[in-house]
Image: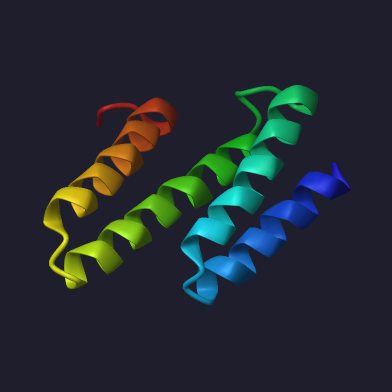
Length: 90
């Protein structure tokens, strides 16, 4: 859907600006639409999962750079969960 694509694009812009929480909201909107209209196995849905994973990783990096290691690990764990779900353990 073009609405999901727009949310995803907005998320990309926000991510590139370092506005990770705002980006995450846009990606979540896109994901909800894609799951309803395309299903969990569609390549477009996978791209949104990847963007969410990338954002969790970026948040983790920012927290790590601030010395907030426990919070960083939580974000990395979320990223890993998505990677395992979408790509498998290999």
